[in-house]
Amino acid sequence: MTTTTLDASAAGTWQLGDRTVNRIGLGAMRLTGMPWDPAPRRREDAIAVLRRAVEVGVDHIDTAAFYFVATRSANELIATALQPYPEHLTIATKIGPSRTRSSDFGFEPYARPEQLRDQLEENIRQLGRDHMDLVYLRWGTGLGPAEGSVAEHVAALVELREEGLLRHIGLSNVSAAQLREALTITPVAAVQNRYGLTERADDDVLALTRDRGIAFVPFFSMGAAVPNAVPGAAPDTTGEAEVAQVAARHGATPAQVRLAWTLHRGPHVLAIPGTGNVAHLEENVAAGALQLGEDDLALLDGVARA
Ligand SMILES: NC(=O)c1ccc[n+]([C@@H]2O[C@H](COP(=O)([O-])OP(=O)(O)OC[C@H]3O[C@@H](n4cnc5c(N)ncnc54)[C@H](OP(=O)(O)O)[C@@H]3O)[C@@H](O)[C@H]2O)c1
Image 1 (tube, rainbow, N blue to C red):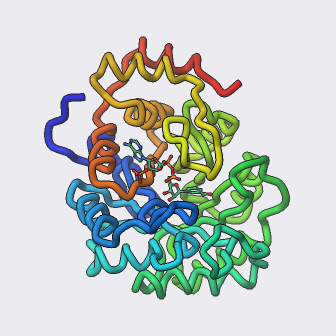
Image 2 (image 1 turned 60 degrees about the vertical axis):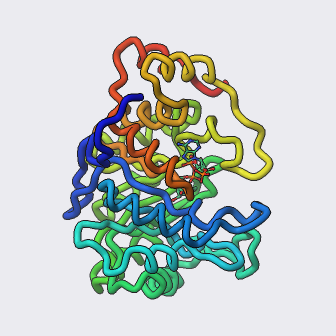
Image 3 (image 1 turned 30 degrees about the vertical axis):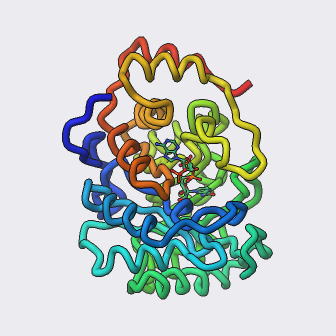
């Protein structure tokens, strides 16, 4: 893919409540490396990714206090690399699950509504801020159907917003029915669900968010191109040939094509590709400038997980 100057605004912007963000952002989960990696990532590499991201216009970073390995945490790396924070930087976090302090990825029981405050305050402390711009109630596992009422937890977030500890409420790993339920209680700025070319179970949530003017923030949207997104997962090769064909037409990489496809799903889609590698970061930002034609989209739209 021929790139001119790297610029995260190439795919346009979205209004996240009172915050304007470029549609290409950064997911922080990969900055530390994953608990099942043989070693953590080098601090200087993670810091370089964060600083380069901001340099090329990334102004939306997705994190969580539960992104850590034994000797690194995503929030601490963000605070170290980016303070004092640029005024235009939007940092989103997720609360609900909490991880045991051990370095595996085991989750403790899900937070009761009154426990969300502690989790939010932990993020604020670690990041060195006074409030969070966007806080997702992270519900189901993201690996199966989302179930249950979110009402009490959403009401707890509304109280925290009234106290000024967060500006905007988001939901993660929720169904369309759960989003509708939340919308009877409060405006919702963003929904973050697993979604991509071969992960289309949430097409209904994508459509509902578009209709309601809510940001849709897919994760694992390069998943099939990247075998280690989930430990032990076999690489999903669905759509590989079609992606390769489109990539060849544009001189792009498969990851760029998958990212560009999600961005073409609607102006409300905000990408948060995760990486701890500067070259990948630059490639992902460049994907925002990739314009897929009708032929490309027709070919890719025919791909779906069996
Ligand atoms: N709400 C939730 O439940 C939930 C769950 C999971 C993740 N998330 C959020 O979503 C973000 C994205 O998810 P993710 O990071 O797990 O998965 P992802 O963005 O789909 O893929 C990340 C993986 O792809 C690799 N990668 C990144 N850019 C690449 C490129 N251009 N070419 C080839 N490989 C590339 C990364 O390795 P390198 O680091 O080596 O580049 C990493 O292994 C996370 O960072 C996190 O903020 C949310």
